[in-house]
Image 1 (cartoon, rainbow, N blue to C red):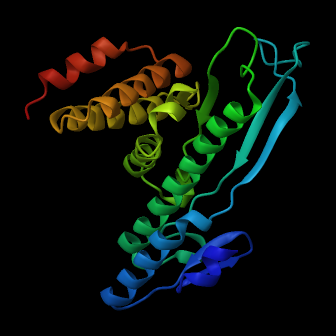
Image 2 (image 1 turned 180 degrees about the vertical axis):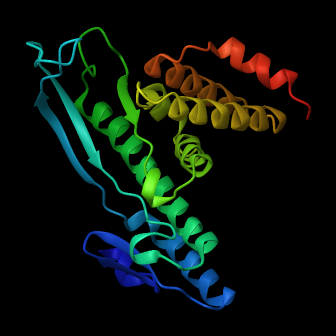
Length: 236
């Protein structure tokens, strides 16, 4: 892959990205700079127009309904785990964040451009293409929820207004795990607040929509109004 050829200190081993444990900060900065310069060469694995069947509401059988979806395969970088154990975790996290942003952006860009190129609606009755962003790197990969949500937000910020208008973006959380929904909500809320203070109105609106989608898709019991009330009641 182009990134691995051009960026020193990175190696693919059995499907995982190994980050060389560079001892000097200068060497780390060189790798980070090189990775940033070559992120545009990252090639996502995309499948589109795949016929799928979902499950019935009780999840005990396949639904009789069929529809077509697209998939973008992406993967996070293990941070202080697997083949990157006992390394500089802060440096590994910087590598991991750059690659997350690139993969989320690539997926969103493909979704928008492929819809525009087709010249047809994403589905009957819809003028936007629905995109679900899955949190990558949680659990044993040790990618923080803060970093994952920030990577999603940065990827959205990188889209132009025409691309954004063609997409309906949601952050995906498991219904049976309320902590995932809450982690996403709180981070999006915080980013939304910061972007408002920086007067970045378009980012504020998009982050708010993603926050609302996370709550709706996860069916979190607490409403967004309750969540905002809790934040207002907390001392700054």
